[in-house]
Structure formats: C-alpha cells, structure tokens
Length: 107
Image (cartoon, rainbow, N blue to C red; front, top):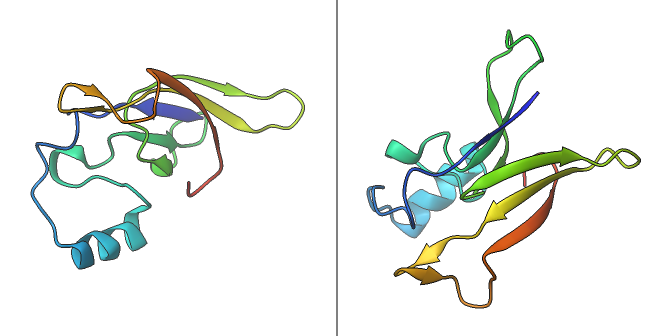
C-alpha cells in the first residue's frame, strides 16, 4: 500500500541547517532529498503491506505536496501529482503549479 505524505513546510524553513557533507551522508541513508527534524518522513511516498503490519519505509522522497497516486494498469508504474514547491512565495523557476511524476523505488 502506498501512502502520500506532504511536507509540513514550504522550502524546509523548519529544518536545521546541515553542511553539504552532512546532507550527502543523510541522503545516503534516507534517500535523495529526504528531510530531517520536523520534516522526517514527510514529503515522501511511504509503502507498507495492505494490512499495515510491515513498518513504513520511504518508496520515494522529496515530493513536496503529493495529492494523488495512480498505478498504470499496463506498466504498473507508480505516478504521483505533485504541487510543486514555492520559493520565496513564488513557484520554483521553470516549474508550473503541478507536475506528474513517474516514480520508482528509491527515487
């Protein structure tokens, strides 16, 4: 079972600062763009078994505001609609308000 969990902040303003080396070490364990502190296990697509007996783990990280999940009926690819991040009150340069993302485990 996939569970979409949005971020609790806009651009990680609630997260303590880390050095580039600390971020690299964190991402090696928790996945690319994985948050820490109040953002731990947020902005993720989490997965567990349908009964919820298995511990949750991150399938994909760094998805700020996932609002919908779909599995393609032929390819079984997982897709998510992401409401793209705001930077200083405006959308990230070059990105529209929403984007469809084809996910794979670890992305």
